[in-house]
Amino acid sequence: MAKYIYQYPQWPDFSWDDKQIQPILGEVRHLQGKIIGQMNVLGFSLKETTSLATLTEDVIKSSEIEGERLNYDQVRSSIARRLGIETAGMVASNRYVEGVVDMMLDATQNYQKPIDNERLFGWHAALFPTGRSGMQKIEVGQYRTGEMQVVSGAMGKEKVHFEAPPAESVPKEMDLFITWLNSDTKLDSVLKSAIAHFWFIIIHPFDDGNGRIARAISDLLLARSDNSNQRFYSLSSQILAQKKRYYEMLQKVQHSSGDITPWFKWYLDCLYDALDVTALTLKKVLSKSNFWEQYKDIQFNHRQNLILNKVLDGFDGKLTSSKWAKIAKCSSDTALRDIQDLISKGILRKEAQGGRSTNYELGFDVEE
Image 1 (cartoon, rainbow, N blue to C red):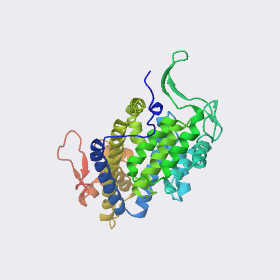
Image 2 (cartoon, helix red, strand yellow):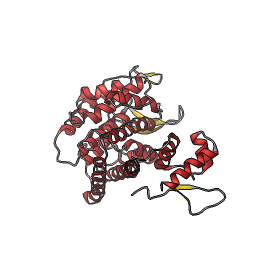
Image 3 (tube, rainbow, N blue to C red):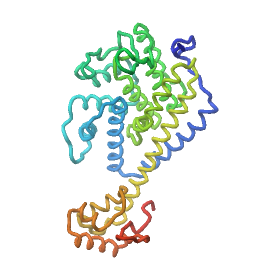
Image 4 (cartoon, helix red, strand yellow):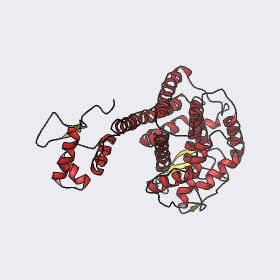
């Protein structure tokens, strides 16, 4: 069987092809800068709302990668309470949600603080407040004392995907990792986040929760790369979208003798995609903000406010008077009057294509 990367004498001295990595890193850094520039244009409340949405998404998607689905409203409410954000529809959260949120907020809000064993033990304990993973009792708030294999398949037909370093070597491995993590390596923080993610997964120091903690460490280092505790893009969301490839890449590079270029390329591409999604979302947020600023002196009724917000968020399908009536819960005549009023103000217009039913669209380019 092929050796694992940690079984080679050069471990953990990673290498990579800088010529392949630097162009992708340059694109990532350029897009990061563009997004930070876009965020600086937003007012405080919009920044707060966007950051809340991103953190909520990150917590939910990181758990979903492991097959665990959290309640969106519980996660959002828990984050909002901790950050002191006033938001509608707050609900109570269970202790599992509170624990996952605790870990993520400690990583992203206290990104400048060094990482040590106790901090990682705290994160692990927060993830498993009952001391169990599902029905199984696990070692919580400490490094594993047993051997660790990642397996799949039915009992008796298990397939071993990965075997982590022996339990007795974990404290020494983690000391090396933590020392590197806290040292000023002169390495770009984005590249450092990629190495940290991979290195931690290879050590697999805990009984469970290693993937979520690896992603929290990545988020901490990405917050350092942005020099901001406000999060505007979610790496975990993109990893979930590419989950199959994520595991394939980890499985492939775990047998490398030390060259992690393929992992770097995949990670940077994934991060670029996450940033690209955010850039498009921010474009919509800015367009919506500009719209309401432009028409702040015009009085809209509550139905017009409701439908215009849906259109600005990206209305699904064509807007017709019958859809308006259904969404706004009003008669067809009322819907038509609302629409005609907006047409007279130049806010809506009839679509040029026409067709069996009349469709309406914004009377101007939403991206202006």
